[in-house]
Length: 101
Image (cartoon, rainbow, N blue to C red):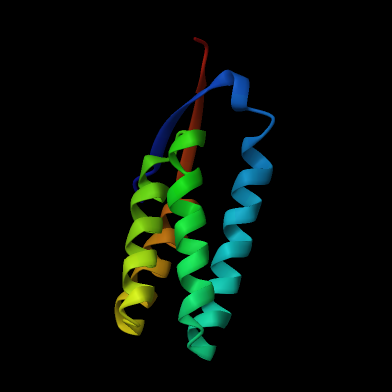
C-alpha cells in the first residue's frame, strides 16, 4: 500500500510521536462517541483536529478535522464513520520525513 509521505520540520521531531499517539486516542474516542451519537463531542474533536493538524505539518488532518466538525453539526453518522476510516488509514500508512530548515 502506498505510504502517505509527510515532510515535517526537524524541530518538531520530538513532539510528533506524542501528537500522533493523541490522534490514535482521538480515533478510539470517535468510535465510542459515534456509537453513543454524541455529536457535540465529535464536533469538538473535529474542531481540535482542524486547528492542530497544519501546525504540525499534517494538512490532511486539518482537512479531515474540518469534515468531522461539519458532519457532526449535521449529525451525519454515515459520513463521520467514513471520515474516521480515512483518518485511521492515513495514520496507519504515514511516513514522516524530517527536514532541516
